[in-house]
Length: 519
Image (tube, rainbow, N blue to C red; front, side, top):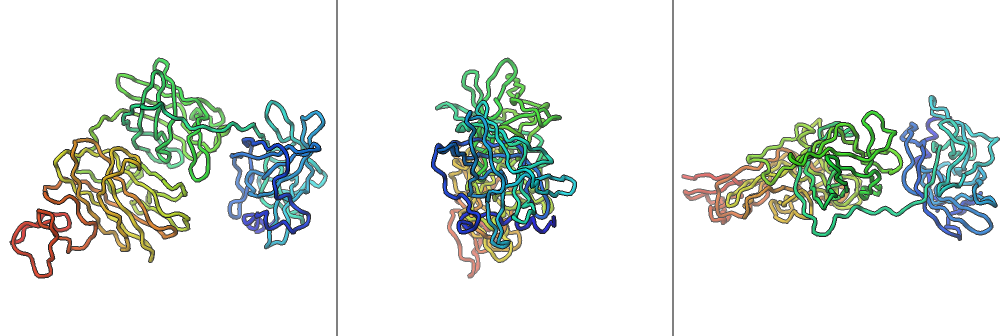
């Protein structure tokens, strides 16, 4: 099989296109009782010119119809199709038999149908050959599970073109388990939480992760909000027994980019052994630790399909002090970026990421279908009542497409608390880093968080930020500084903007956020 044939598989499949094709596909949901199952097992699928292997995730719909007919929608986990295949249920209700050769898709470029087949797979050469002598496959129904029979790493249930060439998709060791609707962990009403500092080693990100989490106690139960940095609003629930807190595996944490996320844990040396997550708890030191397990953010609650795995975890109470001013972050390291909280509020999969080559942070939004709503929130910073602080950040756009951002202040690292405007919504249309500033004055001494909010229109390019600073300033009388790099932004100490074209009279002025004396 030529590798180039796999490219066509990537454009597969819109079943609606195939309604006039022969043989006909089943594109409408058949009549009967619809049941939903969770998938598990393994899949081969094309990525570019090569074949990858991963676990099956998500759900599958099955209709049990009249006359012992059974219909399975999208039977191959990675081959997206609206088509159903037909099977026959045995008289004892324990076996589903599916005839091979049924169409599950059509490719207009090839003018060819994709048919379900059993294939021999050669992992070394990444090639598969149809087993023409195998005319059917069976599923066994037992204890609420439906198990595919007769497959392995080298014998797969897949799809091939009518010519016999493999499409690049196939499954093995498939199991469907009766789906139970997932419910998010919800803390009890009125739960009081306190801020803790989370630090762990990221397996996927290959960096030290540092960010705040929020922990509340209700009797023997412990609730943690934001355990994984890319899910800052998700809760997990554990139970204290002695000096251990146990978080049951499989807890549902919500969706990110249309994928369901679950909490599972494994020993650090064995990712095939599922476990509950256990944190050692030192009540006197108000610290939680774990150096023996991976805490895994998985898109499957039955298998490891990780998006991040944390190890060497330390969670320590921070109190309300926050970091001292002056605060400076140049994003030269991933560790520095790891202390910030990233929130992809529009769940489009495009958000802030660290650029290790440039030593900065980028919001890439090319090809997005939604306007930006992505937060980059600082660690806690201590601000004192009555003092003026200057917040500054360098920003630029790329290409000819303008970007847009604003900066707000909040009481924790959550988007909903970002209520105080620091830098108003500002268009970024300069291709070189330019400093934008805002002045902040708080009424209560406390720990505060600055949120840089990417609000660019959809499908632009890249917003880059760098060199964030929070500095004390003695300027009085100005509640907020305009957010431009224009040297004409000159104010009196009473906050009145001055037109400098005719020259400045002697006195003290605030020029671009800096106090200056004109003689």
